[in-house]
Amino acid sequence: MLTFEPMKQALIVIDVQKDYLPGGAFPLWNTGPVTANIEAAIASARAAGVPVIQVQHIAHGPAPFFRDGTEGVEIHPPVLAAAPDAKVVVKQHADSFLRTTLQQVLDELQVSELLLCGMMTQNCVTHTAISKSAEKYKVTVLADCCTTVSEMVHLVALHALADRVTVASAADAIGTAVSAAAPPAA
Image 1 (cartoon, rainbow, N blue to C red):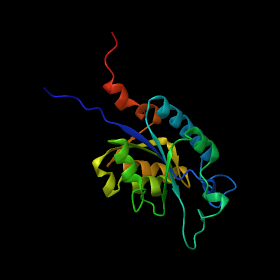
Image 2 (image 1 turned 90 degrees about the horizontal axis):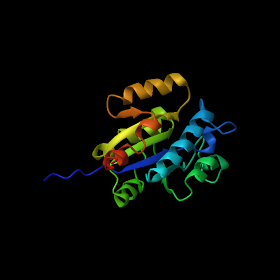
Image 3 (image 1 turned 135 degrees about the horizontal axis):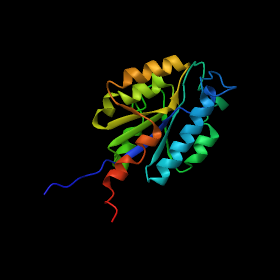
């Protein structure tokens, strides 16, 4: 008899840091609505029992932003507060797997599906989504929970990603693996 093993999701929130927000060293397009969407996605994930992992970029050496020890490197407080128990993975490269503890955290949680969101769509989100290390997972990028320097760059990046991974809204993706595993209502 075949048994169905439901996918276990994890929501990975990439680089939602002060330098990308108004007043930061490199403010991005549409951050107000996107950070609100990310906070809502975190709430939905937690309600569905989906673990949340924060990824924080800390630059070492000369860098225009995310410099270690600056206020701009800090994760946006409301996003951090939305999942106060989330593990924080520190990275130095666009790929959230490269020389980080992300793989170890995902293995410990027995994750098989990644839900990715954050900043910047065409850079860290894309590099994480198509990372060699991400190939063993079902990967979904939450389009309404990502942003970058402009709407055009955001849309081009999502279009390019759609050939390799799933691109969906947070509402359509979060908890779907849990829902699919739930027994039918009597």
